[in-house]
Image 1 (tube, rainbow, N blue to C red):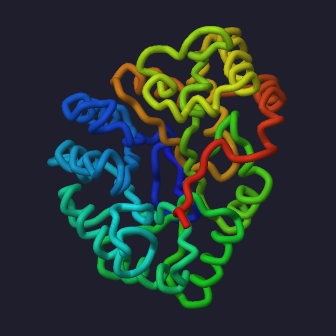
Image 2 (image 1 turned 30 degrees about the vertical axis):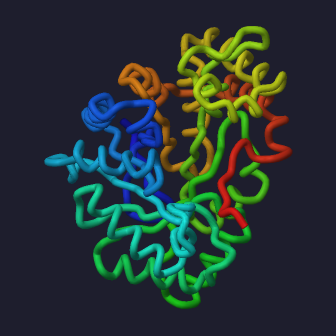
Length: 325
């Protein structure tokens, strides 16, 4: 396994991380625990979850799986998106964040999280309030590092500026949709992160399976694929994205790789990317994705991947999550 520093911090995270938003739903508890143990046994130390994943089941399952193994994991969770129907069950207020951190710690069966992330920018809460709260959490020892998620460039830069001005702990990372099918972060966010020393944690690195080559222009969605289980995902399937997936698959086959592993390897080589989180509903999926860590891309392959994905630097992001108004 390769390890990278998370942003400009001293924290080392595995180049491949484990995303857990399927745990407790598309992967049952026993399968999820096997996946986590397989990941740890093979050098993956970064485990990413959130308070809302599968109705909080993801955190609960992770807590069970890490009993006796907590020291082996860099555990990351999030809060800030809608948790319930109440007026204070969303956003990045001190009230909501403190309540959610305590609940997450109980489910995760730990007294600290390594990386606590704000799941989405909250336009209704002053950034000073959010950042002061996070700084207090770090001072208390319940949080070791803080990160953002789904912030656009100006939002993240404003947060960093406030932290510097006030002497607060600063965001060391940000999670965004980033892949060969979504290169929009390269326009503004990634140059800003390069300048400020913020690590990128891509989610949807395989564009929901599009870059695995499983979809075609004529066939129905494969059974148990995201398009099969989530009807809303079909909006991402069109001639452009499916053709991209097929082109990546062809290039991968020419070089003896799977399209998933090649797509992940491309991401790992991008500037400021610290760890790439991939989900899994079976151990075999994670086993295949682990091959990406050992792939060394030569300049010719990198150029071809850049060329076939260049149109995806423009337009809307593949995915983003914002607080509803």
